[in-house]
Length: 261
Image (cartoon, helix red, strand yellow):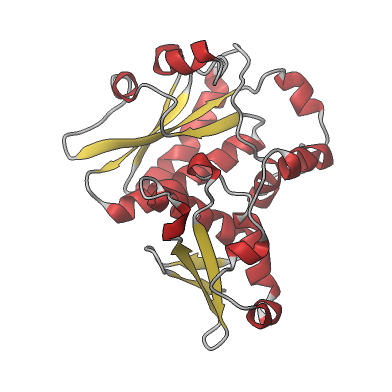
């Protein structure tokens, strides 16, 4: 894995990890993650925090076997009642997830498999803020064996670890002719977004390309049944698309445009 240090490499190997080793995140790794969080919180107007060694937050999920040895998490904190902030939370917290992936750590976005009240006791949440979601983080089970796998082996695990919607489903607003005419950067962006995590694996985001102004757009599919977490999933999918496309910038919001640069 040492030679694979780009975010697209992380996208190609990231999977949802539910089983962790009991070995704690060491101080040096924690400092590196904190250093990654500082600029992200500055530009995002969020307060994403690394919280270590709090297994009570996941006690029920650990006891049921839904999770194993979950004890550390990223607390994703942002302004109350702010739809754009929820989208930014998905975008920027997934950026941290990909950084953690490149460091050999496992992650899992959680919406229901945690004790939100207990989690809030161990992080900073001001009166004008709320705790949106959490990301479990830690060493994957048998992590030394995991780190010994080749990049190609990890890519194959990612490719087969879950079902996914097709490229055609991800580009449902387009017809076949429009798909065939779309540039390579658009296809690469969509293919990266197809590997993005989403609530209950609903994959509620679709993309379209407009040849008239050479822009892409991201849309929330209301039929996906993801009304509670759709904005967070929109942010995650946009981040994956942006990384996959090579270079460009999104406008926030459902239907926001992507300008490729």
